[in-house]
Length: 218
Image (tube, rainbow, N blue to C red):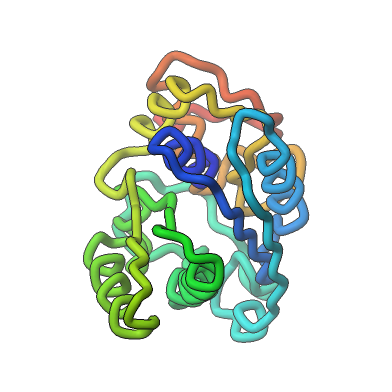
């Protein structure tokens, strides 16, 4: 959902899009890939290319309930301040490294990321400071003539803000996926589902994807 809204935001800013989707052993990688492909085929998006990369090193490393079968995805705790079991150790640095390689090879001007403020309360590699530091590393580690900006348009926004902007941009949320547990229906009770459902409720809209249950998380 966040990545889809970010793609539409990038298009609204005048960028042609190079889609990078990574399967790294996450529980819902099949559904996520299906949604990414469907998004890339939208006629209202200027998609120049779609690259799908499969890598298993993050799942082999483990230590995350998203990739390790020995760990269970926890139920949502919207008020918790501890790093959740779904945190994949240093995942965004791994994914961004691939994205920057892809961007440099195609002379792209920017890499867009869908992280937002409710992510970095629990995921250290979603903080603004992380993206600032990574962008500095990109400047040092690419060719002198390469100039790739790291754009995180919603980094200080809430999930509700993202839904509001996405509805303005006509993002097809019915072909997006957020659940950490299941391919279909979405569980409705993991952190990703809870934040998503709450955001749609906050804007007075019904989330169009199927859920096993739609708790209120009061």
